[in-house]
Length: 212
Image (cartoon, rainbow, N blue to C red; front, side, top):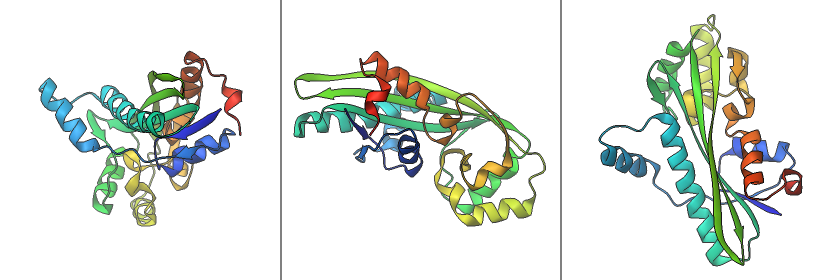
């Protein structure tokens, strides 16, 4: 049973490898900002984070799943995901700049937020239409209240927080600044492995059959 990760995220790839799965990786051909803007325009307001991460996960997984179904003899699962961090009524994606990452860390110091992770899993086979199962996982994250400005500056200068949702990691340099995680910890890394296992089962696939 093959697995395709509809993402080029190093964190999601690492998670699957640590779980015994060596996936094919394909980058979705999607414009996430345009999709989010269109959804907000249709509703007349911004989507809450749990709805937005699921929408984006589904679009990304669908793009790759239907490409594989049309172009190859792929037989297995396609996994798509998206994550956003909510704190104090605000939703944070990737900060991209050092200035924004620094501002966020000053705000997050001593606070607790929620990481929302959307999951879309497709069962793709040569002799059937792709079938999808979806879910959203959440985990709360509490940051140390004694993180110093010097530590924030050094962490931002490392470049790590600039390209991850919420401007932090729990499994790398940022882990020392996090005091508590409630929920599946892999959710904070990039996607919930227990959720992916459950969705695979809904599609008739046994998790251990995915091990490389």
